[in-house]
Length: 73
Image: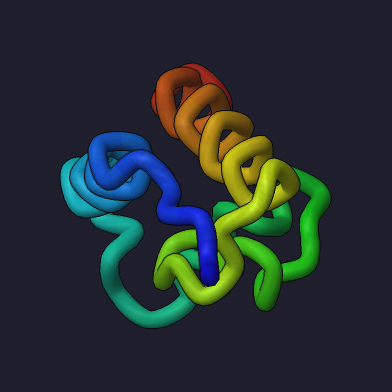
């Protein structure tokens, strides 16, 4: 049985992406590039296809990157 990620973490990342306009085509790839991660890993974590500690770490890192997005743009 799969362990569920905290919904709030996934929702926080998705809301932040929406606020920054990264919900459109290419947004996830751009975020993954800034994180130096494989885009597929980010997508699997966001869709909750992968729910382990590594996925949770990816989401936390994504949230950190998104928090500083405006400073990096």
